[in-house]
Length: 158
Length: 458
Image 1 (spheres, helix red, strand yellow):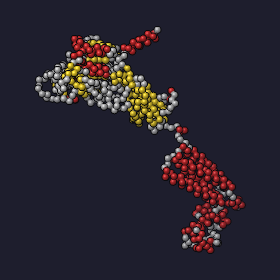
Image 2 (cartoon, rainbow over the protein chains, first blue to last red):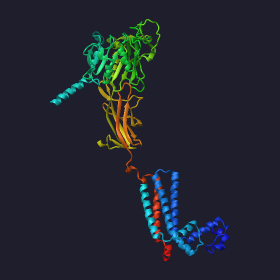
Image 3 (cartoon, rainbow over the protein chains, first blue to last red):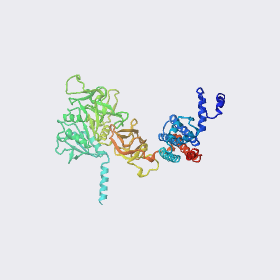
């Protein structure tokens, strides 16, 4: 992958974050976005994204198994699948609460020109009203909600 | 003292009741006392089998089937009357009442005299039909006795009847020929309580000797449509037997020598044996079923007395049902054997049967057979009943109903999730989510909160 891109925009890559030209390929766009994401996202947000990807994988495997093998202990399927989905939702809200302010600080430090994703654009606007929820408070809510979710799921799977 | 007296009395009664399963008081209604001697062997056979014979004329004032509202006799034997009927004490209503009170009736008719209309209307109530002229005789030009009825052909010679159907017991079979002189025929209605014992052969027809018409003009019934001996068993298992030929019970025919037109061999009749079978069946010496112990329980090995006949079962329980059935045979109860093509069945019903299972003989005691069936209680809760409903011709009815409750699973009777291997993937999924969450929390707490520092400085 680097060999294909280096010939097209090798000179521009060395200058770090830059704007793409209008006729660059989809692959280039994706690669640039990925690089941008890795470079600009704080460590905790990366961790959140990794966890959410894991949850999508676990939920997907459970759903595929249900389609293939049937839903016989249906409560087990509901419980396992909903645990993955619920955890994903909770994690997403934690990401919205924590990465919003962090991206606002990072965007203010980096500059308004770096807008990789639409999500970040929304968080920029969210970051305007600052100090709505502190990170510690958001994390405590997240842990509390997750524990309730796990409690219900374990009970339901019997 | 009193106890020993009553015990002695009980023993005495047991000896007296040694024969019929339903009492030994037999009333014989006989119009002409002189006729009594014609049946001497028949009476002595009955007395030898333990019956108390009381002879009464139908005109007698003391004659009453009931005494203070109860049956005065256990069995009734009616010989054909000479006059217009049996009189007021033996009206059709009284005889039907007698049957309803579990009395047994053997009615003998004769083709010699016209049957009174009172008897005809009694038989109509039991769905047995006589010919309209009520004085017909069965005639057969192929199965008659060449020695005594050379011209008239009205002494029928018949084989002893076998099974009525392949799935019934034969109570009247055996070797030998029956001679039925002057038999009055009847036909049977379409009624499950009525069963023929002996039918006329296919070549027989009914003929009124009082009419001088040479040919039979209006045929009422012919051949094996005509029944000569029939039985009717009421729903309460009391019995009524109609015998077409009273002469066949006479001493003369008990040991007569007869000859069929075909082979020309002389044989003696088997009437005595047949009369014994017929009276034994009618007066409940044979074909009487008794239900003994009924047990149902869960199918498990170590049973205690508390486990027997529980009032409540759970759905999908494995259940065993046992029923003990005996059959009375002349003077004792013997193990009941279901006929070869028949089955004793158990139903597990709530409104309609959820199971109808064949009960198989599982063990045998000295005088009973124990039939069992094992089944899984259906997946439906409610009030169910174990039912055994066995109603067959010539056997007394068995109708047993035992109610039980069937409940559904209690919440702690379902299998735990890990017992079902199909759910292991989802269980693993749930626990990997929880494990992932814990790892995430751990890493989160130890990761560098870069943005938080920036935020705090702001």
